[in-house]
Image (cartoon, rainbow, N blue to C red; front, side, top):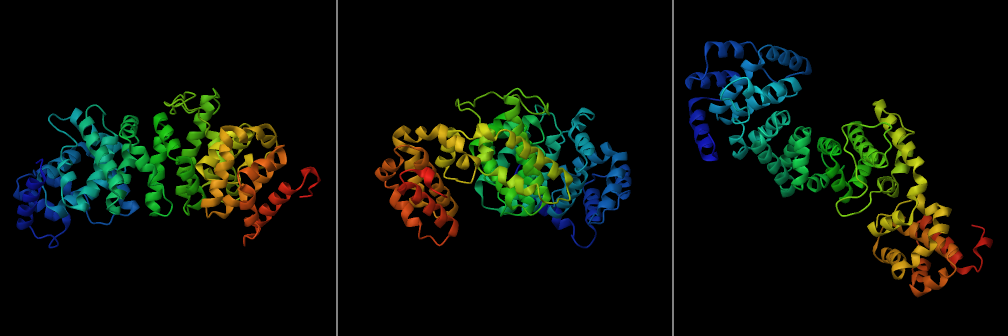
Length: 474
């Protein structure tokens, strides 16, 4: 069976022969199997050895997996036989649901994926491919999950065609943004697929990383937030993936998860991902302490020749402050606090080298201003004050442009502070501000209803007005 029309035709024929709901799901499957002459006496013994009554509790799942494990190959071959021949939707959904439970066991999944090496003329993925094009969302959703689990444990070259097919379908769902159920199904499938190193590389080469990064949204469904974060963590073991994550604001998105996620599992995967990204900076410098052999070696520049400054990006978005606040909280998952403290210590050790003009310029041009260390570093302002004149005062003009366009009170507050520091340290600061018409914009902010913005605007104006700023008491 390889086409949707054939699949649907057989489904209707089988539906006519049975009455779903008149008997249990497995009884119905057995009835269909017998009518199609699929089941032997041994098959019936296997099926009757299991209690198929849903829903399965955690306890019954353990018992179920243990029973199947005793005759795993026999069960796998039986499932393949049934799925190859039974197309009635309710029966297929039931079989796939049962397989979802069994595929929680990595041992079972590995045995399913490798059944072809032990049995002649058996393709473990063939029964699932027709279901990918059916009209039933329930069938597609469960097929994504089961097939992804099997492919993640498969030999890449052997199942390359099926892997490409499912990866393409997942990326298509991420791009379409039409059906939230299918988007969730695609992300769930990727939590399996991306466990395979070669599939991570394939997904990255197909431009899947930006599509996935766009789904890192703490306002979405909690489980989707967690599973998207899990995918990002898996991708953080691939260097090319991390480069793309960095280019598409991935660090800032993960930072948002840390600030807003209400479940510890979401916090955990965000921290794990940031930990891997930070570790790349250490490996780039040849620091092998705490080295993880699963992580790639890192060149000093990306494909475009841009140098990596991972610590600088983390500090520029305010991660240092967030980690500091998190370090004072209590967590049920003690590993979270350990990771928070380790990353916090790492960033604090590297804070001096991140207070560079390149980092400041990057922050301003990104228009994501925050109270990062660079703003209040006396060393930064003294050593870099002449940089503000370069490129026809590009950065000063950008600060003025942000004041004109942003509604972000914090950004305006930071700009008032920085303009004040510029005037304080630059001998021609007042003249440049007047030429760029920044003074008038700052004066207008003195009337702000926000007390902190009003305060910084007032301090800035005072620095502009005084002849010798060292006599300013503020």
